Amino acid sequence: MSKIAQYSDIIDRSLDRWENAFEAARAATYSPGQFAQDMAESWADWALYTAMPLSCFGLDISARPAVPTVEFIVTDNTVPPMTQMVRVPQINNVTAAASPNLNRPGTTTPPLIPAANVITTLAGMYLKITLDVPGIAALTGMATVTANVYSGDVLGTGPNVAIAHVKVVWLA
Image (cartoon, rainbow, N blue to C red; front, side):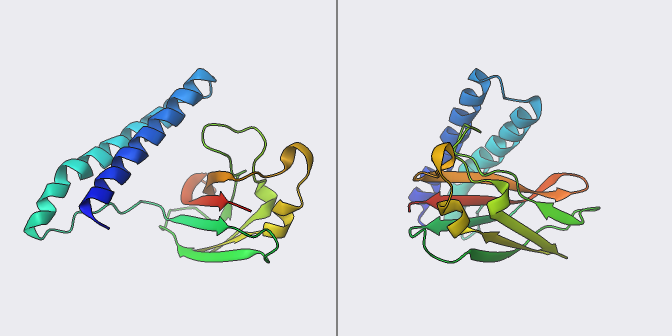
C-alpha cells in the first residue's frame, strides 16, 4: 500500500471513529469505556501517522492490530455459508467465543445481522467464523438486511474481551 493510501486510511479511520462516537453520544449510548478505547485507538493512529515519514529510511512502519479483523464480502445471497479461520491472541481464561449482533455503523437498531447467523468456534488459538448467508438472506420484515457494512466484536467468554472483529460488507 502506498504511503498516501496509508495516510488517507488513518485519517478516514479517525474521522469514522469520532463520527460514530458523536452519534452514540447524541443517542446517550456512549460509555466511558468506549471513550477510553476511542482515545487509545486515536493515539495509536496518530502515532503511526507521525512516524510514517521514517519509512523513507527503510524502517517498517505499519499498524498491526491487537485483534484480527475477519471480513466477509457478500455479493450473492444464494451462496452457501462462508467460513474463515484466523489466529487470535491468547488471553487467559478464554474458553469459548461468542458473536454479538453485527450492526451498521453508529446504530444498534434493525436491520442488523443476528448473532445466530454468525457462528463462532474457538479451538486453542484459532477462531473459526461461519457466516450463514442463506439464513441472513431469509430474514424478512424489519429484519431484512440491506446493502451496508455490518460489524461487531467476537467476545472471548469468561473475561468477555474482544478476541476478533467481524466485518460484513453486504452488497446482495
